[in-house]
Image (tube, rainbow, N blue to C red; front, side, top):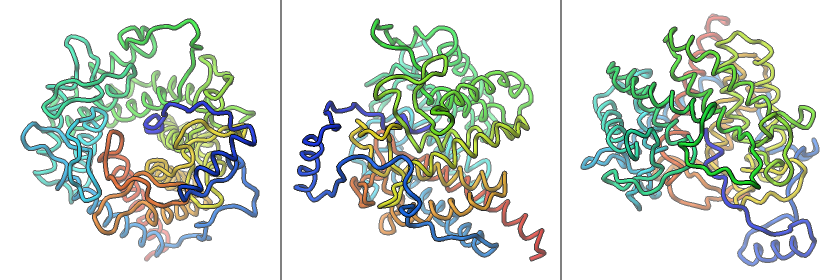
Length: 462
């Protein structure tokens, strides 16, 4: 769940006029930034389709090559966070890390605390080479930091968004997302340690989130303003579906308990397929209709791709072939084809479905997380469907991503690139980028590739 990371305040400018466009272009060129007078077409013409699409197929050797590269990169990325992010004095993790891993701010973001607890716990539980005491110890220290400081004022379940280094609350959000990553981390920690108290706490928080979303949102503290049109953000059902996946794993009782919620969340996500099935919109009305204005026209390609693999996993659990097809065609293939930059490569951060200029300041930047989500989505989609196009798209996306985001000198990945693919911010971590999207994608792709290689070897006898 990630696109909500960068839904920043829009600037107020009528870029539909020639002079506004011209002024923007002149200003950007004065600072050495090339800019087109307007956003790209949502559906680029075939003759302008992207560079980096060079693979015409992938054989067993190609699968093995990507497996070796991804496995080695996962080792390197995890080593970076193990070396630089641990707070040995207060517990938890530093995430504001410069290019070389040096801490530039000691604030702790609850989203990223929960995510790193999940990442360490999952690697310890699932990948034999990461079953090392220091990884579990760090995960436990992060989990205890969350238990002690994550919730702002007991008995309320509301979590902080930002904490001081020693755990005092700095900021709270009127959303469910700090609480969601609190659940994700603690549930996985309970599985890794075998200590049920972590999972009990996650279950209690899950009950609160479901109540806030489906019954009574008053504890979130959001006032109901007369001019604010109620709307459904895709981030909310996406996150609930991800949590259902997490809590249900290997637990028949939990799977039964959350079955209805998972189906509800999946249907809410599907409501975001609009424009006669040709686009996934980030926001729709509560009854699944298009909204007016910039809010209603907003597209987030990375979020749609992430929703695609969330839906695909749910469809696999439910053995729902129709949903599997929708996940692949509407949420994986389609957002890629409309969201890929035909000139410079990479996925745009935001788009306007009607081709107007998006109002997000970073709309044409290339951020790390949409590309990691796309790698997961394409590879998972191929493993499920054997659709060769998806394997080619994985190859295309992985080549671009490793070429542009990977830092061969200091390790880990840059997170923020300008449109042309040059590094815009040299930081390796911050308020939104931590030990999560990059290692999660590498871990999941490594696992899928191992399965594909075994199956291919079995079929070929090699």
